[in-house]
Picture 1 (cartoon, rainbow, N blue to C red):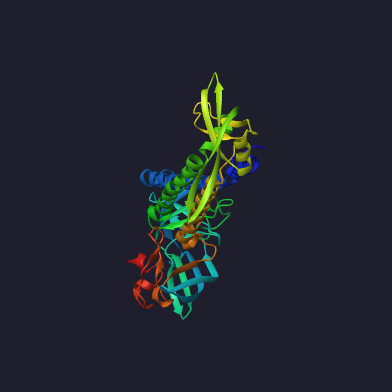
Picture 2 (tube, one colour):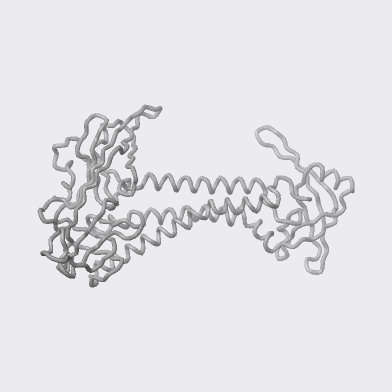
Length: 397
């Protein structure tokens, strides 16, 4: 089979385009979907904050203030971490890695701006969108804590239903007849966000907006700049038999080495195309056949609308250099996206909280993770006795 030199061949080219195209396209599609999802949730929440629609059964987002029976915290998450530090040529770095997590939850009420009470029935898979503060540090051990306190303003996302207890009065642990109750949905944990809307939605909305732009550029480079000629010839190219008119060579130099390239020339004359001169790079063996006159004709795949776009052979092939550039672009785009998302992920979305930074363990032991803050980490005083170092202290001010 006659094919251009330095190409993958017809079968491997098709497989390469599918796999590498998915490598560059799938992360872009996911980023777009997640951006639209977070933007939709933000718009919905902002609309609800302005219009205060009545409570309805089904998927819901409610807003109000926390009320507990005894005034204590409704939710408390304790995360024990073990730290390590190491030295490198640029200084020191450290990490704090989760070893144990305790989630203390209990039912509580949310009082809406319309003075309606909704019973919140959280499970241990609750997602608490709140600050993660340091409660205790002892050498390479520390405890991180997040609390949902009484009287805090919250947004709760879950499934709302109207339920009733068979007897007794309505409390934070029992719903009265016909009371509203919100729980987590199937496959989707309940999400409780402390504070305003920005903490819950804008952080990821901004991240995925940037990710969509960046991954869109990568996908455009792969699909439009590197694969477009393959798509055009494969979908719309016509096979034409060209009369071989000659063979030439040219040289290139790279890293002090000289390389010889072999090219065959041909011509096609037809009523539709007219007279079109064609050429493509070939192997040395095919070059010698053309040079000696033994190769008199060869198939060329030609794009009728743009005859300058053509390639030797009867099936579309992908040049190796284009395929490797596409693979590199797609791999780097997907890798940078995954690593950046992992680095920017708030603690409440991590199965095991891992925090890495420069400096020694003690240098940032008391820093907090604040949802919605660029870089997440916010300095805190180094003394645990200080008011701001205690969980929820900033919220009580």
